[in-house]
Length: 231
Image (cartoon, rainbow, N blue to C red; front, side, top):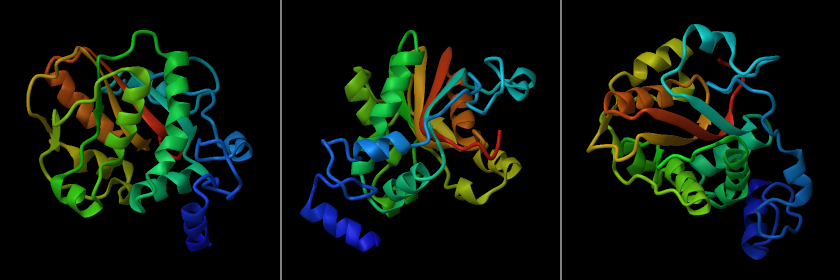
């Protein structure tokens, strides 16, 4: 089925990424867009589901290293499959389909926009293997729409780490300790870290701590999707 869809997309560039129906250039038809799992009531700090109040109990007890998380979707079907395909199968058009929803969330829920977008960096070995950094592609799309510059080479992943998706929450924290370094001054006191998915928050948390140590005062995190399996 995947081969058929890819061939259809080559023959019919206007075919929906999910159902192959025609669309108006957004990558997904109106019916499929309406079915995506849009993020609901979430913790202001970490994006975890909350029944009431702006901040979850975990963040009240142990605030994350960043100030505010915004996600467009819950990491559930079919968004999970779309992001996986975008990340590992070079279907870059998926970003064009999902990024506008994140832009809308930013406009609706963010007061002062950050002065800089910082995509989570890949280690050079993984970047060479994959051929692109999905976080940078998302950041470019957001930057063009919102008029915010995207950092080039400001942060580096100085050591290769295990894939976070294969580790439990505690191991994710240990895996990322000391993983990032900055190559220069941040250049802005308000920065938004951009990534595709947030699960435990270990990756963006470690990058946020690195920014804090270098004088950044406000740190937002913008992701396409937030999982709800872990806080």
